[in-house]
Image 1 (cartoon, rainbow, N blue to C red):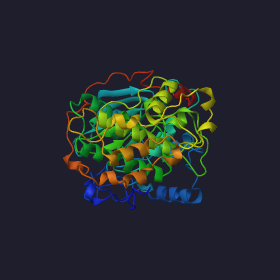
Image 2: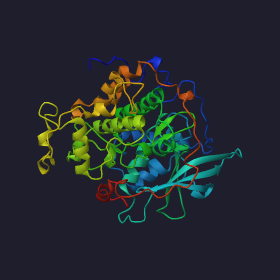
Image 3: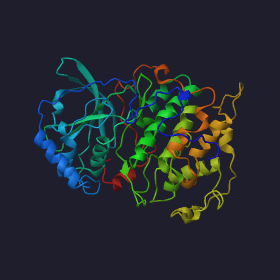
Length: 442
């Protein structure tokens, strides 16, 4: 793109004033929080696992992983909190019991299980708060759910400042009682914005967007598509750090792109190619979701709050314009296009929602450069949609005001310390049928 400044996507410009992670995703000046030392010192186990990894690098691939692999590779490993790097094989140890944790309150309950705010006592005598995610197993008939296998496998692989850290996997008294022990953050972006009196400022939006793009860039560089990016899956700390969570729908992908489950991604953040039945999609679906989140951070309400897939497509095309052969050459090849009779709508309404900066406008304003980036996220044709690495280098982050420094981001009263009602089904959980097809208890 001619308007982009070409730089290393892992190192956004210093003028953005956003703390830059090192190669492993940690800020260069961040100290290790430190984890419990491993007293076992099992060198023979290290050698066996090292040899196995060298001889069979595909052993832990998504397709071949079963319950035995999960036990060897996932539940038998722990990762120290906030170390910013993947633990080495010498950190293998048995799973602890969930009895080591005291549940304080239910944060949320959704399709994939319940999430608790929980407290544990460290060996030093200090207390520590964690998020404890219980994997829902009550309707599973064929063993451990694949979505849980994927989530555990992926989260134990990813280590980045802007991806939620899974510290360990613990077990309950029964064989089907599995919990993920994750770092605790006091907010998710959805409920935080619902309780805010004013919108985020432009500089604060830029800071949050940069952090989200860093997480996406890291995931995509590691061949992972999240497939469910939305404001409720973005956690926010009172240190100004944003983290992506909930990898229950995440998938490893390859080149060439293989067919995957259609209908993923929560409806309001679902890209038009998925709405139209595309199965061979790529990380561009995440960037569409980023565009929807970007717009939502600006205006404090969802951009496309559709109730059905047809309603979503109508809202999208009424705002962005109906695709043509020029704007989306492969549009008519998509499986579900012939099922609909789309009215021809010209583009241009998106700019009306985000007009140029004005002292007299009550709408969420965007400069020409900011609108250019938003439109690049929301390109209907996924082949023309901007990537995370390209977006990090966009000139929007260079213009005034610069992104707010992470350490200067606002703090709020914790929204996750109070019991949360059950997540609504239906419009708020519109991929319910897709999850049924995936074998997820709903």
